[in-house]
Image 1 (spheres, rainbow, N blue to C red):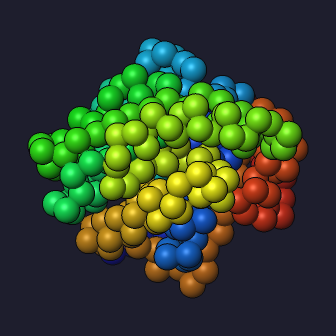
Image 2 (cartoon, helix red, strand yellow; image 1 turned 60 degrees about the horizontal axis):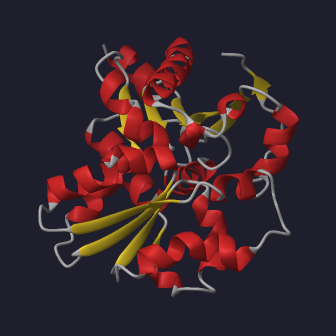
Length: 268
């Protein structure tokens, strides 16, 4: 029995996103849980998730979960707001590993602060359409007021490393609407958006924005600890997988983390 428990503890953790944005979450996990073995799956073939409908997304996420199941993971981290919003509820009971959905976890943490009464959310179109942030935040605090704003042009800027774009127009056409709401905090509700934080801080105070990655990673660590699932290994590792263009994934990943080896190509 002890041997089986040890094997589960030292099983890998799957981390998934539509591309490289979820590396913001992986980076935090590596800082606070450095002895874990991570399998990061960047679904570059189906990027961007924000433009897909719920049926498509559930099918895509199921294929990634199936891949992780084959790898014998002990947990899956949905380091993607869009998939958390659309696919988690549909699939959460179909697998025997723990699943951590970004939106639900972050909303639970933030709504516990009763001083937060007005929150803005900037996210993909699919996340905003789902109203998942509003629903989850109000579960913890029914009186909280939330505005959700889709920012469809932001992910392509990050993934394609676009430099020469009309910065003020592309940032402010979305940010203005949220600032008019006078929020106390603005959640960067897509894991790609923290890359734009320095740009955003030209137009609004930097401390107004919340990068959910740290909150999310801390919650996951506490949860694994409570369940007795933290690894007992002396060191950790990361293995990367991409559903298309591993070279492009590695190049884009440099925005967030240094990757020494080319990701494995896994065709879903």
